[in-house]
Image (cartoon, rainbow, N blue to C red; front, side, top):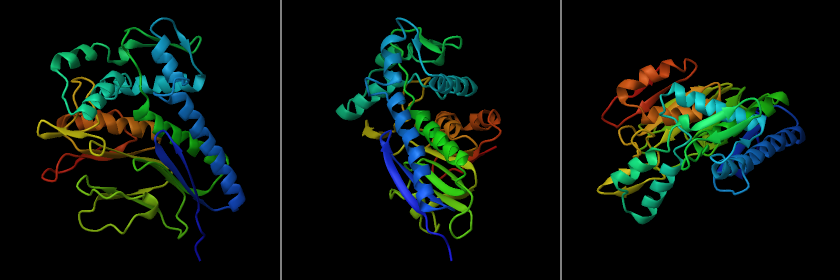
Length: 318
């Protein structure tokens, strides 16, 4: 007879974080989940791009004028973000915030920005505009229009922090997810089998929770992966884009061109670290097809694929 899952959830970072735990007393599992969820909510307050009281907002307001001190934890996340940016030759970049705002406006109005407008904003984009001082955990921005947005790594980072809390509390089995794009699973299912997660094709418009996944069949899934102590991240151009000029423009913005990515549709990968997985899927989906293997070589612990179109084979890595 299989154990029942203890389930709970919280809303944070504009998504739903879900927990499915088993292998212990329900009161203990609930307390462990509440501690992990509290950390997610605390990080949301610090990392929010839109909340005026967040650390990120303070950096964006003040760091061009004077160094802004941050907590060691946020400093470490900024270091990790810049490191990934450098290792992906800028394909992952937390300074694309002005470009995201530009394309959000285009989505609302249905009017494409001009090339000169994009080129002007690109002058403020790039990790070289962020200076970190380890001596006092401070951040400076070197361009007046540079702004950071940790949305492409923050959810994975929060999930990783929650997972580490659950590991410290010795929760033996579980699956936690942030929305439908970031998942960590460890141990076994209540039926004592591995956690299996189906990766949907972009052509499948229905949304599934990995906790309630139907049996894989036909073209419904590009792949089914088993997770045990690793994270799975999925990034797709679909879902938050818009149609203009006779084509679909997704929400993933290429940091070098300033325009939405269109040559790849989806990237899925596993990694021991959920923050790295979150960031790397964004970089992979922006990379040219021929550059994916070289990019992946810099992250030997990551494995996955990029989906370009139904007519093309998956680009797998490593």
